[in-house]
Length: 307
Image: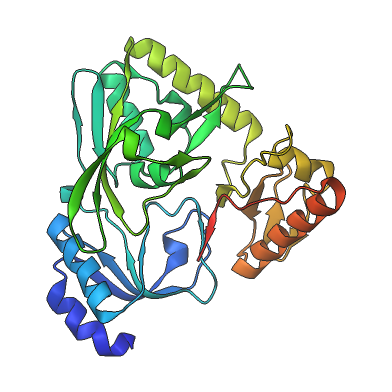
């Protein structure tokens, strides 16, 4: 199927097109087999062409951000993988108390812009290596660095989203139309193009100070140095214990399978220590789920996406 569409892809897409692109190059886990077709659209129209080409040709399409919440199987991804690094698709601009950012803007770039404009509220995103689009789609968040019972999520600050649906049509969704859940946002088959955040005026030095506090806590408690996908599981609603605490209480820290290991620092992290395969990681995921279920009766749900 892929060999038959290669010529058509090059005719339809203006941006970069690569065949059999190893996904390990594009995921924070550094794991993953080849994508049949890797596409970097040149602009929004190019993205629309890619979506319509995929739909009309009945070719599977996967839109990815920075690959930081993702485990790609060793077999790779069939069809088209779309990534949007082009400069024409990256923009941030400021209102009186709001900031709008396109989906491919990194969270670090967003936070730097916020601090320069003296607009605070998103400091809890410090140290999360994803993009705006990925963070909004997963409703990324963090526990407060001092008030540990207090959680913040990016959805709390989203005022509106600009999206493109599977027909290539662009629309604006306001806050009341957005159904944010715990680490989730249901947009069906739509792609986030841009997010608008309503923030608070604050001195730059105070914003930077808060960012440093969040980053310091992350460095103390999380595995930031080795390849990983961040927290593997969502925190369960039926207990006051976090997923990491439940796994830790099952004495699984440091457990290794192949090149993958349940972090000795944070039990809800699995790290790629030595050319881990996706099966190594999945086996550890299943082990942690089974042990927690057997001991606590709690069914852990994935926070990462496996494709």
